[in-house]
Image 1: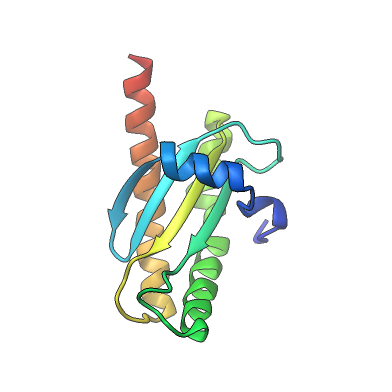
Image 2 (image 1 turned 30 degrees about the horizontal axis):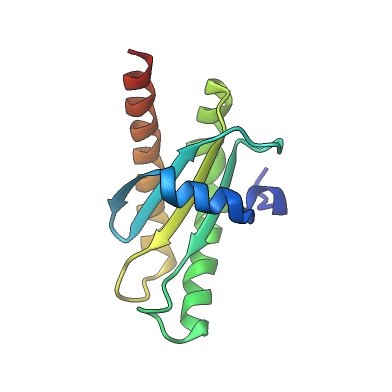
Length: 134
């Protein structure tokens, strides 16, 4: 299950627009997370897009390096931190992981922060979900 298939990537322009216009967000340095509960036509419960701003990292090599590190950290931790939770709740999620850091950080730091970010995402989802139920 440590894969990152095409179906797990958020590619649809309609869904991306919907995510950025209607989604909830929070910041946990060096990531800004935007998420939206949405019914997805795929077997995966979460579709994700990872972005690194061109404004801050002019060279494509640097942006690609950061995206590879984030993607790898996500791939290795998604099962325990996201998929089991959303399988239990039978819910689908659109997710955008935006890197807002100012420097290129090493993989260990990115993985540690991404784990914390995905845990906070669970808390935010639970909090919003419980408020809607009331």
